[in-house]
Length: 338
Image 1 (cartoon, rainbow, N blue to C red):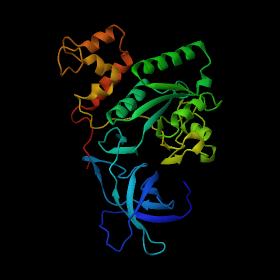
Image 2: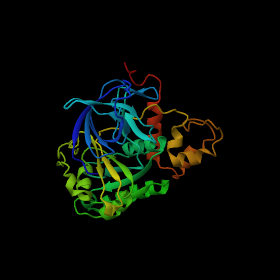
Image 3: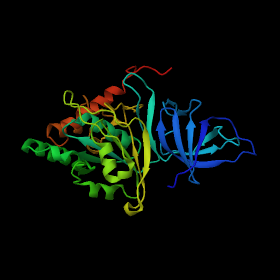
Image 4: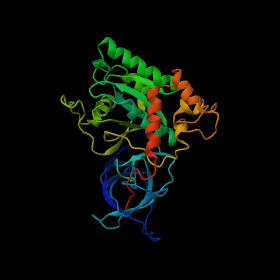
């Protein structure tokens, strides 16, 4: 994308007049209530959001997301804002709960081909529950997920390598693509590039897992900020404070990657408790042999899922994650939005 001209615009629901010129563009950056839109002509428009839009009745903190295609009208006066008039229908999106005690949602990205979940098994340690919650969300919204285990250069003990093998086997056996990389040494980055080429990929993960470092390995010109891990708390610092889309070079096959701020937790939103098992592929497959069609896999007799857990054919960690999301769906667990 060749980007040169900068223009400012606001978000509004006001209808346009016939004399106004409609333009189309792609949202490539979201920083608070400010958005960057690249017009099809290549010009960049900085936009302020106005109004309150709902996504299927869900109150969102960001009515427009990186990856959205939008219609807008540029101003006919220099220095004055134009107006975003519409958001094109989304092919998909990834959404998470904005905070632990709210039903407000935050859209991470829209119109993506896949999500690469960046995790680490040390410095910091990504919990399996966190992994499972994001993977379940990807399943719920029909987005292909890849698990990228970073910082493998720090896994130098026998126990560390066994943990890496166990986690890789767990998710590979479920059906997820798993790739081990070290952004520091470059190991595995070539294979990761092959998986990203020609695709629009959302990068997600905890703070400190090395998303920015991976982006710098793939796209040195991006020059994303990085930070050391807190030795005391074994946690990362927020170096990315907004979502941004980067174009991949032609030699990679084109495509885009979307960097998002790291998160400490991942809250699911508006999951129907009768469908949560559908978002755990191995639990869903096993549920076909449960005695009752509406089995919740918690207490019912003849539950094949719990039988397979007892036989170590379904990981206990995955079942625990399923139960935690099931608890999320309990009535009145979260504050209602204003």
